[in-house]
Amino acid sequence: MTSERATPAGSESGEPAPADLILEQSIGFSGHVTGALHTCDDGTMLYVSGSWVIRSHKDDPTQQTFMRGHANPILSFAVSKSGRLAASGESGKLSDLIVWDVPTGEVKYRLSEHDWGVEHVAFSADEKLLVSISGYKDES
Image 1: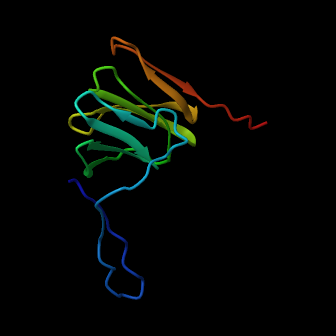
Image 2 (image 1 turned 45 degrees about the vertical axis):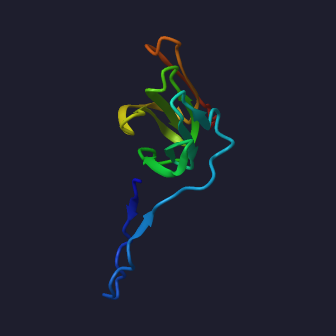
């Protein structure tokens, strides 16, 4: 299991910082996200929870890998036909789209060209193309 560590800053009074917090497990997922849950043929499960993509396995969903890279909550999610690649797009202004290497959980590519949210992502059947649609915010 992969744990994510969050270390809070110490107080200005000179007191020691509180103990580190470790994320060991996530329960639940972001159901409003397009394509938020995907099960691959090998039993790997990928799903979105807030700003993270979580990888686990149907035989033991408590063993989780937290795939971090977004600053804002994820708005769209897709997995390629082979299950080797996943793409996630975040909400908010100046949003990123991340392509993930599913077996390693690492960021493969990051696209920072969307002005206001990545509303939808999809892979082509041959996995050579990825399409993304940005949101629109009228600031007039």
